[in-house]
Structure formats: structure tokens, C-alpha cells
Image (cartoon, rainbow, N blue to C red; front, side):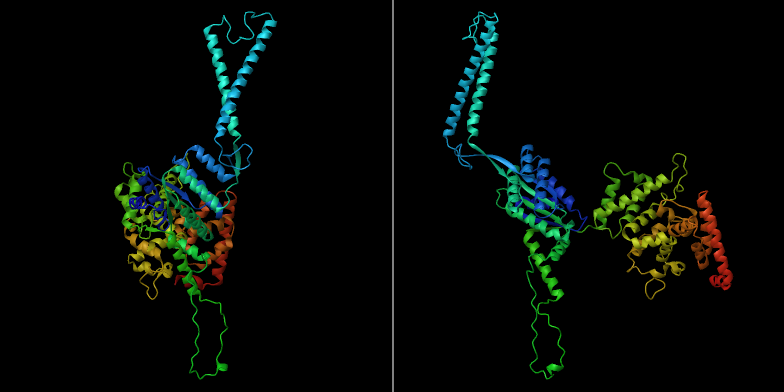
Length: 613
């Protein structure tokens, strides 16, 4: 793709805008970086990569100029002096010295040639004045020395060449005198020439025309053809998208007049940009829908008085027709902007898995995770689980890999004894089941609703796996009622619950390495209560005990559907409570819950029998 773009921009001779189109994460920025490498070998081209996600209106155009200047300086396309000068022009008032025709003129103009004669004359006069000044200074010094009774052999008039002076002294004195005289001549000539200069102040550019002129100066300074890659247009607010495109179009038209016309490469999701333009209705509707004119039936025999008349809305347009016309206007705007469209192809599953393997296995040094999960074969099985069918772009791959690696490394640390403190998780309780951890990683990122349900009831994951693999016992479990297909008690609804399709694809392999309980893989920590009831319910019971809320715990016991597991989990929470207030509250709440439950069961002796049935 980058090579094709490189050929395209080198073959065109005019300024144009190329649309590099694709959804988020499709690799647009990577293509721009590769294009920069492709054109780096050609000294006639340079690529400046900037973001449109800054400011708005004229401020956006100025921010774009700032970004272009920074990128040009970074790539050494302009020198420091030019950079400082153009930044000063953008940031505030700019002062320049221009020529004027006469020293008395108040406006810039073409100076006369005789100014050089005047400058030469001024230089000669300054030299003569300097000679006279130096001679008189020496005369005064000799007179003073004579008055003090010294150096009587030095003449006041010829002090600069005494008869008994050494050659070295004569050379040094002469060199100093010549240097001073030449400096005076130069200063005199420059002062004369400065009289023909006038200082002109240019205010900060606050209009589009002035910023276009600054862009033209930048093109002249760089001296190469530019590819200006503008990213993040589709990340702007809808009201700013059209403004950003108008700014780019303004610079694009300015570049057409330059002898090295630039090429603008706009990276964006065209659907998002079009929808944003539709929202602001660019320039009104290009194709306004025509309202049909009602025609009365000539042979109608029905009395007009008996016919109900609908309220008249002469200016109303059908919403669907208005929407269609606005979309056509937006598409027409983009067609005029993009001379060439380059659509990034969709990523195939195999390509994304190869990309994940490249990230983990590398060309020279493999990621430490490869050794920790057991080598090459387990790593590839892990990648096949993480990079599922709904992963569509490289960013999604990176996000899943980073999340899994973070959880795995954290679990590894929590399985170790640190500074004499016991491990939070039993060794291998999480790191011994990388495939199950990978499945939970995918559920957490891509199927959140199903992940939350599994977090609340940990048994649900293994029940779903068994049901998807054909277990009739699992299919009859009440926990799966909401996941069954309509009209069928032997099949789960994979169409409406997309996470079930992922579980179905990975259930067979995961079943061979199934952990006894998945609470530690969800929380990266474990307790006996969470293993019995799942993390959410265990946390609720623990809070009820510590906060001395025996009534709520008693209501759970009265319900009776998981009474044995509830009592066992409450016992585990009591055993892990800290001594002091927490333990006192937990014991009091447990006694209160048992009292409430016992009273309810005594009042309804058939409840136990009903629950047992």
C-alpha cells in the first residue's frame, strides 16, 4: 500500500488531496510511516505528518502551520533562523527593514544608485575623522608626558613614528591604527545606508489570506515537494470536521500556485466524516427534494365537505428525502475534495494472528510470555483463543495481548511469596490455566454483558461450555434459562448472544484444561467463599457480615435455593474476618441471620419441604 502511494504521489504534477480511508485501527498511521520511509531516499520529496485535532477556525489554520513548521525543522528541511522568523510571524507582530527611495521618504520604495556614492563618501569622511582624532589624542598624550619630564626625545607631531622605536612596536601601533580606521569607515558607510531603510511592522496573521501567505513562504523555504499527511480528522467533533476540511482545502488551493505543489494525504474514516458533514448541512442542500403536488381526482363524486382535510404544511419536507439530499450533498463535497481515494483493505483473521505471532515470537528475541506459558505450541494455541473472529484491526490485537500479558504477570507475582507474606493465590491457580484466562480476557473486552454475568455467578462459564458441547444436564440448569433459543429447550441462542459463539469455538480446547473454579482468574485473588458462590455473591455476604447486616443475610437463607452453599460461604467469611470489630460484627450478624431464618422456617414448616421438592 505504501509503495503504491509512493508511485502515485511521484507521478502527479499538481496539488491534490488523497483520501487514505479506513476505520479506526485499520493501519492508516502505519501506512503513512511506511510512505515516509519510501520517499526518504528521494531528495525531491519530504513527508510532514501532522494532526488536525487542534483548535478551530483561523486558530486551526495557525495550529496547522505550527505543526508544519515543527515537522519541517525536525526533518531539517528549514534552518533554525527561518523557523524562529516564521514562528514569530505567527505568534505576534513582525518587524522588517525595507528599502526606501530617499532618507526622508515615509514609505518603502526602490532606492537610488547614488546612495552607494554617499555611503563611500561617508566612509572616507569617517576614516579622516578617525585619523585626525587618533593624531590629536597622541599629541595630547605626548604633551602630558613632556610636562612630567619624560620621553623628551619623542616629538608631539610625529609621535606615531618615534626614531628609537623598535620594528615590533611600529607594526603593532600601525595595525591598531589601521583596524580602528577601517572600523570607522565601515560604520560610516553602514550609517549612510541605514538612512535608506524603513522599519515596517506586520501584525499577527489573523485571516485566512495571511495564513495562506505564511504557508506559501514555508513551501519556498523548504524547496522540496511536500506530502502533508493530516491525521485524526475523524476524531474531531462533528461541528469541527467541516471546518478542518475547509482549512485543508484552503491550503491545497494555495499550493496549486507554487512551482512545487504539495500533496495532502488525509487519513480518516470516510463514513464518520460524511456523517459529521451531514450533521452540519454544508452550504445548504445541494439537491433539494421536490415535493409532490397533490392532484384532485376530476371524477370524484364525494362531497368536499365530507372529506377530512389534513393540516397544511407547505414548507415541510419528508424527513427521509431531506436526509437523502443532505447525504448526497456531503458525498459531493467529499468527491470534490478527494482527487484520489485509497481504501485500506480489510484484515483477514490469518493476517491478524500472524501479526500477533510476530509481536510475541519476534524475529530475533521472543517475548518472555512464550517461555512462561510453555513454549511455541501453547503460545500459538493462546493466540488462536485471543484473536477471535470478531477482531478486525491491529489495535484490537495489541489491546487483547496487552491485557492478557498484564493479568498473567500480575497473577504470577501474586502466586509468589513476597517478603515473608503469604501468596494471595495458590501457585498455578491462574498461571496454570492460560487458555481460560485468555477466554476471560476476550469476554471482558468484547462481550462485557456475558462477562459480568459470569463474574456474578462463576458456575455459569462451565455450564455454558458443557451445554455448548451437548450436555443435556447443563442445558436443564436454571442458570441457562435466559440463554436458550426461543421454542427450544435443547439449544442455546447463539444469534442474540454473540459471546456464546466465541465460547462455542473455544469450549472444546478449554475443557481439557478447565480449572476447578474460575474466581481467581477473574479477580486475580481467591477465597473459599468466592470459590463456593462466585465473586459477587461472596463479596455481598462478606460485606453483610462485616457491616452487621444480619437481616439481609437472613433473607438469603430464607430463600433457600442455595442455603447450604450460603452457610458454608458465611462460615468461610467468619474464618477470614479480622479480629476485633470485623469479627464481632460478623458473629453478631450471623447469629441474627440464623435467628431470622429460624423464625421464618418455624412460621412456615412446609417451606423446607417445598424447597426440597
